[in-house]
Amino acid sequence: MRPSTAYLPSVPGTTASPKVAVVVDWLNQLGGAELVVREILATFPGATLYTLFDTMRPDDRARISSEPSVTSYLQKLPDIGTRYRSLLPVMVHAIGTLDLSSADVIISSHHSVAKGIRKHAGQFHLCYCHSPMRYAWDKREAYLEDHGIRGVKAAVARALLERIRTWDLTVADRVDRFVVNSRYVGDRVRRHYGRDFVVIHPPVDLEFFTPDRSIARDPNIYVTASRQVPYKRIDRIVEAFRTLPERRLVVIGDGPQHARLRELVADAPNISLLGELSREAMRDWFRRARAFVFAADEDFGIVPLEAQACGTPVIALGQGGALETVNGYEGPDRTGQYFPDDQPSTIAEAVRRFEALTIPPTAEACRANAERFDAMGFRTALRQEVEQGLAGLRSEM
Image (cartoon, rainbow, N blue to C red):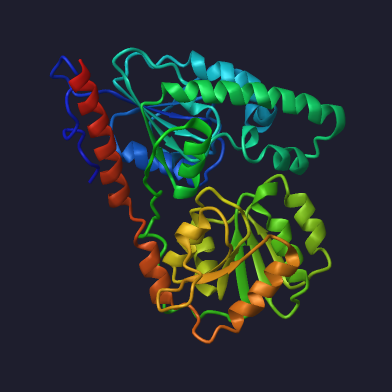
């Protein structure tokens, strides 16, 4: 049963129930951030969804909401779903054209420009921050390198990103309360914006991702799954397993790096590049694999938790959100193995060290760890933050 909005205090000065607007940067493919939007909408039934553009496949879109979204003028641009990466300066303008004047509560699901919406007097704006804009802050040089932007183009891009960073800092003042998906992101919110924050971790679909004792684990199979974009470092994992021919690596997902990955696995029969799979097929691979391999310096990272919910240990880069979702330390609660950097040789060595553990992680420990990230806890915590924000607004009027 979806939760009621009756818990919310009335709009200051009235007895009316508050109207909630949920703003997301864009909707073009289903990933961890989009699944958080689904949970936000489930927490506030009747909320209106706003976004720059919505080009998601119908079956994926239905998993978020059956209601249509309100989009900006970018929706009318041809091929916006593939061209959007080059339109960041336009997005900065477009987000400000969305009219949210009828809302009492604004919840922005932000990793790029969503928190830059225009707020009116009497509105409460909570930003659920997946990350400060990566390419304008911490990851600028890595972003330019990963996308092959060099020379004069890189100089122009740096100048443009500097202007966007100034804008990003300015619009942070429009946010009344920051909620972040991890302490790792929260530290950057404090460093970049000078703001305090509350951590509410994204939830895992614990009803779907479950262990299955009838599926035998193969001690030679490892799996990784991700959008195949440069910062996920799937290519580093593939290169590592090229040096481990006696183990099999299953790679699930698609994206801009897919063609490069095909070249890397052409002469590596132990590596299977499967492309996008159904949720059911991906879950089956999680249940069969000895471990899930994760090499991204991720803000949070939901897929390693989905694997653990299936009872599968995780071999992860010991940075970023993985430090909050994977327990790589010795003990009965251990759920995986950390490695210190994303070099292929380091990843390969981590696999060997994982296999040599005297007391390996158990399926029970992995499942118990994933259960800390449940949907009800997420919804309850988010409702409390909005309730407190509205109550504070009411006391000021």
